[in-house]
Length: 480
Ligand SMILES: NC(=O)C[C@H](N)C(=O)O
Image 1 (cartoon, protein in one colour):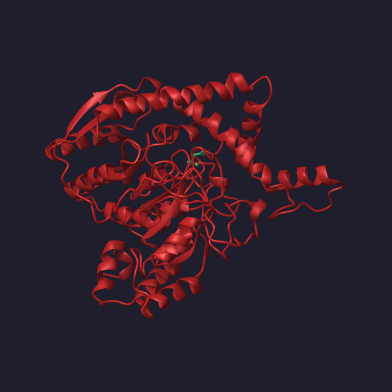
Image 2: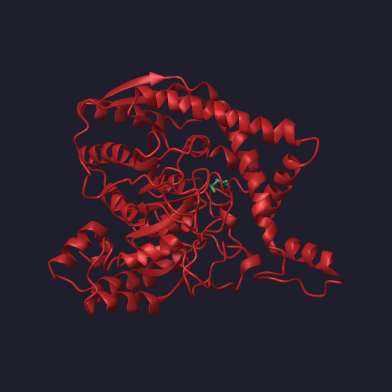
């Protein structure tokens, strides 16, 4: 077996026993990138030098840290000092981050070896990575299909074994949906459990850094490395999630799991429905109970999400004006024209759509009818989730209604693209944690099972995911 085929926790064990060097590991992944990247296209920038110098630090004696000697890929909206941070947008082309995001600082402090920056939908707006201004990324299981989005590069790179671990961001499903499409595991932690300092803001009350790996142990490992309160992000919480990796347990006897009827309705792929029904049996065999529940507010989640996230985006993206960073239009006749032209030429169509939608719902006369109403709906959704979690330890659903679709299939149909997120957005609205793990295949493509929990119940949902994964023994690999 080649080194790139091992999972992060396996590599960690091999390094710990001195069986391999960090250089061997990094070179193996860099070699893999060389052979498959042309077909997958997960990276916007591979930084061989940074990777090899990170590995050298380990081999020279810096062996401490949860991720010591392990390669990690970073989504291109998370700042890494000295590397580009384009958010896959023309407006930030050529922008080099002058500082590390807190999560980057933590990855480095824990010995992680940063390999490069990963492709995404522009400013994290999209579900297929087709909205990147630079290139498309392909699904390693079928190169004619999308990897999902917006963290499509983060998911495809891990599935293609170009890196064992990656970071993404999840505003409405952007870590879980691509993880499901690419047959890997992805976690969106509780809002406030991970710092957003140095992460380009999209919807500030929804955004959360998420983690991707090939199994639950790897997710627990990288998540433990980056959680915690940060004085530079006042939305972070002081509550400690504990050592998710060391405390991982397969014992889920007696756990009460809810399954919402509304997540099994119209539009759900038949095999996805079957795989959820089979998953119920797996949980029961593991000693948990599964009970059907009703989530009455589920139907309103998507509408509330697109109003709130677009309103926040229209405000957050105002800073990209052609003056402060990145792209500046040529030949502007005055300051207003410079703003106008830089933004018109610098942003892609999906970003413009969100800015216009967001500006509209915040404008006088429409604020009450749309934005304020969406905030009220948000509260009702949060109350409904809290009430479920007062009786249950976790809730399960499919991660997405269908498997990965073909490249180009949904680019013209905005609504069809937004519907991809129907099962994932309520989680961001409620601010709770959720993990997606593989639960089967349809048409040769992976399907994901989403496990959600109460605020700060990462250990519980990861334990449930770990028990399920161990029982099923699914280890999906693309034939690349
Ligand atoms: N950023 C996300 O979580 C993705 C979501 N599909 C969106 O376009 O808003």
